[in-house]
Image (cartoon, rainbow, N blue to C red; front, side, top):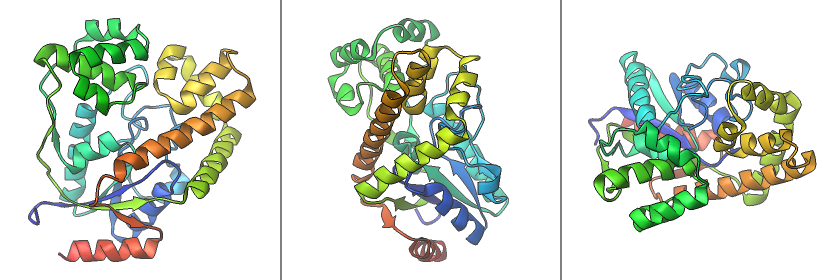
Length: 295
């Protein structure tokens, strides 16, 4: 493991402060940030996904942001390939890569080097499955591969469809094999439940003030309401509000709760990994990184 290139990973639930910490650490250790966020890859989805602004980045290069159009499908296999390329490019320039994000499946595809089943996407099947509600798709997956169904959230339509695709081809979704490319230091950022709840609320208000509703309106000029809802969280609830299905107050209340539940699910995943060093300040993170880079 020690002969592998070193990768610093900063992870944690949404609104925990990963972005600001990663920029401070990148400045200290001559680093560049690679985003591990399943939605920041899409152009035009800025406020809703919390993309770093030019001012916030303070000159630190960020990779894997704005790489595909919102009309395009993008999956974890494509993400993995682009991240490997970005990290290797950063290392070739003798800089320190920092993988930063809160999308567990995307993060661990790099940390553990998942080797994905070689089943080609089937556009016709996907289009057909997209028309069905998530609950019906979940039942279909339970019939094909109950073990795989248990591993997924019932509303995660994209991954349910992919699992159905693989299970139809291979009989079941095989366990992922691991072939890690990097020696990783995992730093986790978290807060108390109350502080995180407050942070989510404050961040949401800031995003509304900066034009989050306008962002969703603009995206709807390019993609359907259904496609917007598939992106979840902010895009789902604001799309419903803009279609007059719910009031503004209901939208904001539902969105706050949905983000809190999302953060809880993220932490459920991360808590299983005892490799994570949980840090609550920059100094502790710096000390752990210094030790890691000296090994």
